[in-house]
Image (cartoon, rainbow, N blue to C red; front, side, top):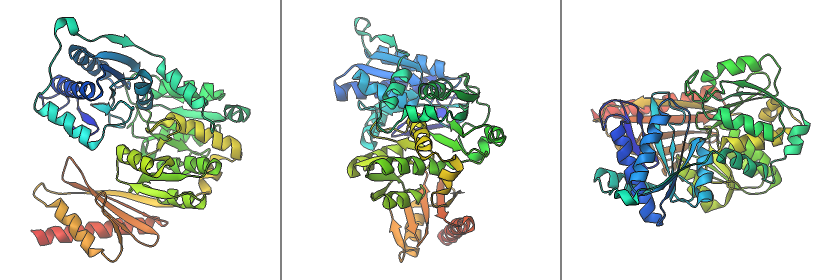
Length: 463
């Protein structure tokens, strides 16, 4: 069993002994710690919660809800919802924070408590450390019987979320409706099956073919929206009956697109395409993380903006977006962050913006994809024994490639003329992740293998 404690939340597999998986005892402990921290920090006793449709969701929700009530806090429960919807609801409710019950793209056996501050954004590293400290020290106190908190359900926030999307100046409902698009969607039997059809209907898309849109939590395939996991909808798209294919993960913060011929658009290019549309309408800056495609930088500079790379992680992207006044940003996993709506990855706003882009350019999806620089990313990892000095390895790689441009804000990123390699150590296990990118697939693979060879040589020397 697995239990991972990080700054953004508590993630683990359901079952097992306390402290070894996401057991009921662990759920109560970390909920109590977060509720105590959030209410003390804000002076507010309201917490918003929502969940994806995974099988353990109702059980976890009951534990979280009653723990918060036992602390004397007032719970607003959105029920089956999406991560971005909960993020929007927290400031709308004037709450102290929020908890999203989702393990995002992880398989069925996983669940998690994702933690939001009073702005509806993921908590910072410092705040996360405080929450973990409270949990480790069991430093929370439950309310007496006359001071228990309250509970209220509110199932209206997906509709409110969609209303806010339709009100955005760069979302053109009339243009979308006029094109009479045919769209196929795969919502992996989670809450996207509720939200995505509602959004498409509100945008005037009448021809929608739904695959796996029953929010049962029984994922029909690996729920991470990677090309190897979405073969079914790609096969349907190959028949030529649809203009666009849309795939979301269980909590609807990642967006993958499929071209009209069944070819995946590429999750790295979701952000690139939507940024190109935003920048064509409004000059501004962009941000993505160090492991995302350099195509975004090319597009941004072509449009007269400035691109900045952040450390990996949504909270880091958001921080850098605020620092640079970026008007669009996100991550290369299909995560779109559009501050005009809120500072969080949001597949729903991504869908609306991309459909507007299609409508205004009057281009097939494949033509839109072909308009961008074509890069290839190779994603690898090397597993190490716990005794190996991972930090020492990264330092030696940095020294070895000192003649190149090296970025060390998050691991080691080595930049060459038209390619890069990024090495990051895992926070939870002895693994180094190695991402490389080039305009040639073979070069990207070569660079990754070269770095892996360098690492093995260093390990041999250490031994």
